[in-house]
Image (cartoon, rainbow, N blue to C red; front, side, top):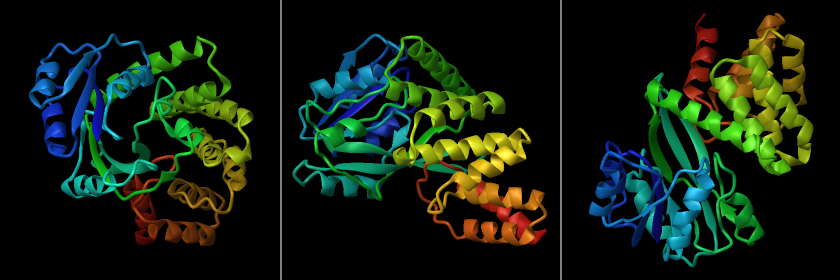
Length: 321
C-alpha cells in the first residue's frame, strides 16, 4: 500500500500524522508544493519520497502527481493535519490484504473551534489504477473515476481524526485560499459538472462567512442546474439554501425548501430547521416531534456535514425550557 499526501509548511503536524501510520504503508509519496519550514526533511526522515511541485491552485493536479509515482496495489490518502487512530490502522491493515477491487469511504472526524466535532465521509482508500485520478481543483475526489472504472464504493467504519479546523486563524486562511481557487477556476469556463461543484463550495464559503444572500444565490444556481436524480447533492443544496432563507428571514422560501426535501431525508439540519419553522408558526406539537427525532439520530457522517451536538443542544434546550 502507498500513502499519498500533499503538504506545504506542515512542520508542526506532519510528524504526528506519519507516526500514526508507521508500519502500515510500504511506500510514502509526499508532494510538497513549496514548504519553507523543514517539512521536506521531516518527510524524508520518515522514509518518504518527496516530489517538489509548483502550486497551481489545483489540489487534484498535486494529488495526481503522487498517484503517478505510487507502486502499491492500494492507495491511502491522508493530509498532514490528520491522524489515524490505532483501531483504524488495524482495519486498514486487514482491508489491504484483499485484492484491490473495491474502494472505501472513511469517516473524517474534524474538531472545530467551538469544541464540537463534525463528521464527514470521503473515499480515501482505493485501488491503484492509472484511470483512477482525482478531479476538481478544490474538494477533489476520485469517486467518479472509480465508478467509471467499475470499482464499487463501500462504506466503512474507519475513522480519521482531522485537526485542521480548530484554529480560527488557520480556518480563515483556508477560506481565503479556497475563494481564490474557486474564482480562478470559474473564470476558466469549467465543464458543467465542475461549475456546479465550484458554485456549491462557493455557497458554502459565503455561508461560513454568514453572507446568507450570496450563499443562497449560489445554491439557487446549483439547484437550477441539477436534477432530483442527482441526490444526495441536490438534497444537500436544497437544505443549505433553506438554512440561508431562514437566516434571511425569508420564512416562506425556507418552508418551501424544507417541504421539497424527500421524506427519506432525515438529516439533522432538516429536523432542526423544521422544528424552528414550526415554532415560528406556533406549532409546538410539530416542533416537539422534530426535536425528538433529532435527539435520537446517530453521530455519523451526514451530507452536508453537520455539528450534531450543537443541534442536539438546541433540542435539549427546547425540552428543558
